[in-house]
Length: 134
Length: 210
Image (cartoon, rainbow over all chains, first blue to last red; front, side):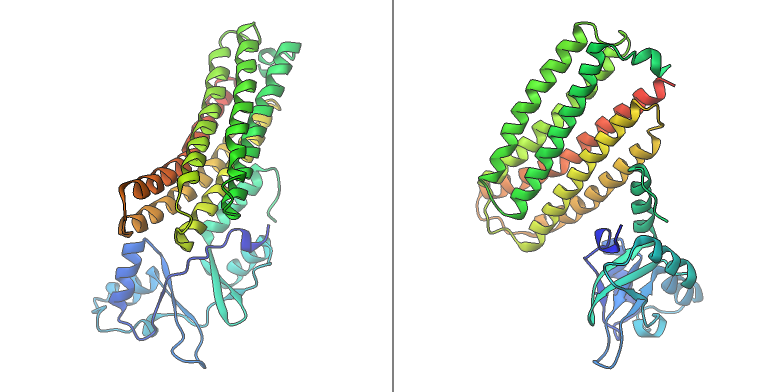
């Protein structure tokens, strides 16, 4: 199964210089675990900010999320793959880099995201169909 | 146990083959529904009432064969109920198809994409239901098949929540436009609930036969 069959095309993003509080609001409203962080300029690259970043780097340290910018806690660059990559390769990639999501790109644009939960669901469906994932 | 229950008599085989046919017709209807949505073709959607009628004929035959004495008595009501639930999926899909006929073709792109995604998942759920039904007669455990159907249903639920959120923000110009759109989405998203019910019923049969 190719990754494009299971990727989520709707990606929510946040500006790199926005306050972390904006990211928190978006995550709570849309029940998301991560947001794509837009590049600041043409030389910059996409990043990602996750609930882990917010909890461990801001809330856990009792810092004010409205005074810290998203780019200060986000990770970049993001791990990107092609849309035709097979799921088993994605699983190895996630395992190797210990990451919970990978982004799918087309040229310079990010067109989708796949989380561990998406991979697990796809793998279970493949098993139910009688196929093998890896 | 299963060998005794599904003793493989002529009538039993006929019922099993007809139930498979019934589910296959549901798959065809889901496929046709998806294609009509993708191509925005209201004429193509007319295949749904046709397939629903075909499904009705098969359902009547299955029920008659069961009441003529196919299968052990304790299994008959369960099989009949399963067939009735599959038939309900046809009815809900037909309701959605009828609403589609009156739907304003200028609905927004994002909403249209979501509806296509839901119809695609509905099709995959029907295919998985067929796999699960066939597996029942191979004495397999249906747990994984049932889980796969639940995963699909959860996806539809997520899209539905998002769709409804956006629908509520949409300006409604007249009563019927709003009602038709709302009903179309309700019926479209209800198909997966019914298929999940059918899958649960199949799983219950699977467990009760162990």
